[in-house]
Length: 205
Image (tube, rainbow, N blue to C red):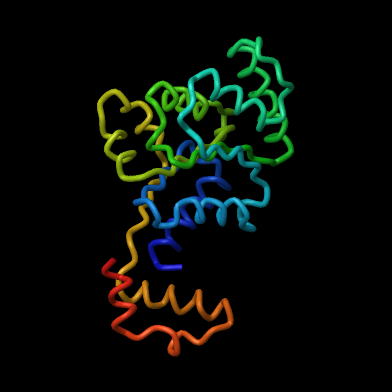
């Protein structure tokens, strides 16, 4: 892990395990957001967290709630109203919270979420007891997500953000260390495979 990745991982783990309202993870495509999310979910710190993972956010409002219901283990009922579904969902997360379990919503590629779903997620993040949030949310997306969160129409969502972190592209030294680590993991000798010039070219590209 680079220092930026380690810091981001700590933020996501804390956001989930401490049930913070919304944690935002920003990074360009290919910087490791999805890998980091999965590492956080699988970490010891998040052992009491059950995550609903959504990685296809280009859904309608109805499809979003259908997917949410299915991944929460609610019975399939296409005719169920949104109010009924939310009541059942809240009942489940309250029951889990009473057992010291946390239920979280993790959305990858969140920059592609339509505004109407960002608003629904804001409302879900408002579910709470007098002492803690019931459904912490993690939004991971490309820099466009950060730009959208600065727009006036999403100011209420932005106000719910408790933690924010950013993954940066690897610098030259980090690129070299990453290549070497992957080669060693595969049983190879990094010094015998790539010259310094080759690593520099990989970094530049």
